[in-house]
Image 1: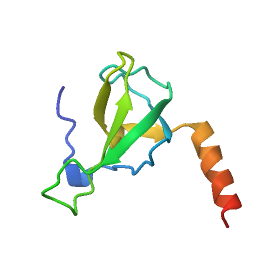
Image 2: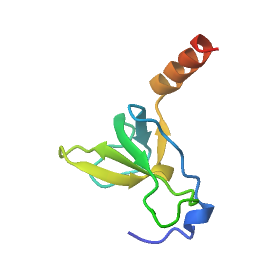
Image 3: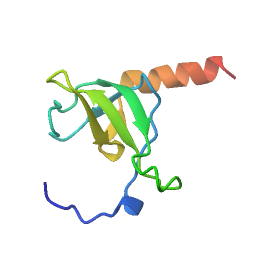
Amino acid sequence: MSWDGLYVRERDYKEFQIGDEVFTTKKYGGLIKRKGYIVIDCFNPYKHLPDSNARHVTLLNEFGKEERYGSYRFQKTERQLREDKINQIINK
């Protein structure tokens, strides 16, 4: 994997909730582009740097293995965005 020229502090790491459905737009280690995957966990991988904005997500990939990926490579699916909006309206 080649370096894309961005440091951790410059990336846009997203915070996902457990159970959110996310997808990636690029081929990335055992994942299919634009297919939805459920977030098993979202966490800061650097325990010694609690203020770090870095986030990793744990997903179940196509090989049936739980793998960690950088959350900056993922977006919520349209279905998940609609569900979040409905929950936001209901909980007001």
